[in-house]
Image 1 (cartoon, rainbow, N blue to C red):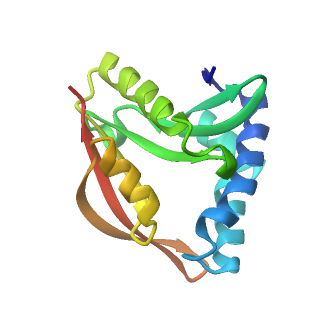
Image 2 (tube, helix red, strand yellow):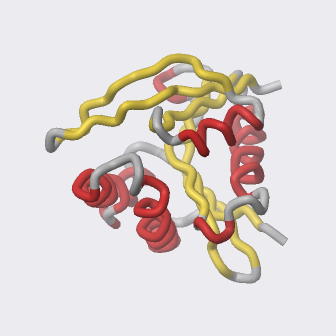
Length: 167
């Protein structure tokens, strides 16, 4: 059975491990190896993850089954002082995708957002990540707008911002 647990700072090592295994497979046809390496270091270095939790107040959830961590997501309620919760990250190990882990993580965040009075979930997804876009649309997200974010070192994130209305 899949269990969703809140990650503590020491648990962020599992987030990093999942990201390092997932990113190259997820983005190899979308981003250059240099951009993947840059973004992994920028977002998933141990100090960067710790800062996201302690300074930016992101909350990480881990999905596990039989003691093994299979995926994670991070979120921020009332993001940008709005009544929306942002899912900053969500990744599932490639060999465990299709087991409903992503849905369980999003449902956990949806419930937390609802309990905190937020009206929507939203997230960014690379505009070329068709599999992820299809997944989000399948569970009720819709395209809200597109944005390009300069992330430094000559790289940008060219994203679709998707939203889900919380019932």
